[in-house]
Length: 312
Image 1 (tube, rainbow, N blue to C red):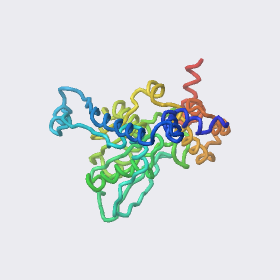
Image 2 (image 1 turned 120 degrees about the horizontal axis):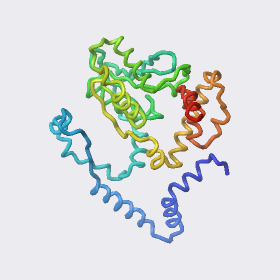
Image 3 (image 1 turned 30 degrees about the vertical axis):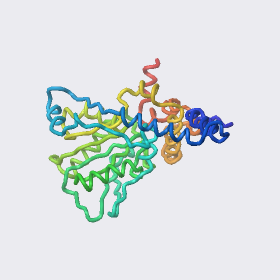
Image 4 (image 1 turned 90 degrees about the vertical axis):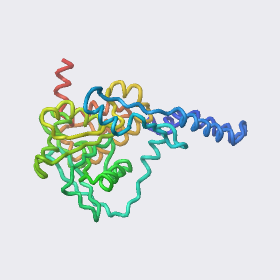
């Protein structure tokens, strides 16, 4: 069997699920046992789930938390989808319906492929309102339900002029700068362009998911305190410590999902990568995300020279 096949991963990750199906089909256990067991499992999570809010004491944030009554908020997951993988599947496939016609205008920032997708709803004019930038996860874009869903809430209920930040890895206009460049420098350049177009006094807010949340918080910590270009931000599902997150959270199935997406990006941007002399065949055939990052992601962000210096 092909080493890159999804079947072994699915069998290994969900072996309990498959075992129950086999036992049910063979009539070793009654068909209603798994149903009752799952409902009890859902009930347990419903009763034991809790929300923990972390914030710095004795600051303005403490007053905001108290006024918003978030401390007394009790999160209860959907009864039939109590655990994270199931919630992820449902949320990644469910779009909020809207009666408004949606248009997307893509504006590129600089020459490296970074862009902002501006979302407009027919009949709603938020052009002069505060701006909200959505930073999706590693594989996120305007077509993903969770991205367009939050945009929908921000535009219709929040009144924000909303755009989606797309980093340089994810589109066919990808170019590679010869200088050493951090992710947050790309964000800084995008914010400068927004300020240039809408004015220095325009309020800008950010909301990040997963990898996008990590970029956003890193920017806030390293750049935003110098000149506050972002007035407020929300971080959701942020993998703060990548090494630990990769070791504990990135199992083989998720590893394969992310790798498959990034390999599609390579195919999409292949014509723009010739000057890097990348081994395209290696990138398309590897089954290791770390190996892909070493030979693709690092080079895209100009990290190769720095890595060589460290290794010497």
